[in-house]
Length: 91
Ligand SMILES: [Zn+2]
Image (cartoon, rainbow, N blue to C red; front, side):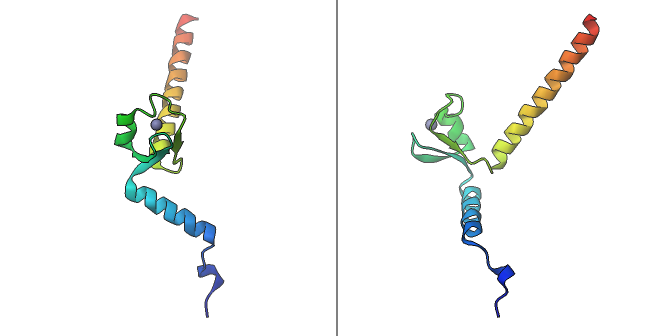
């Protein structure tokens, strides 16, 4: 007899395949303009990010974007800390 808990829903199956495909290709996104999936290197080469290419679809589940967000928030926190130090020195 099959246990129902072992059965994956179709949605989860698709998600699983999607994530394993991303891992396999090392792609961090897809560009509708260039019509190709982009790895971190390709992203830099084509300049999709620096040009703020509106056709770029990010794979937000990818660690690359998570790291980017982390770095962004760390920088923000550092800036705020520095600002506070400067403020304290000025007054
Ligand atoms: Zn692009």
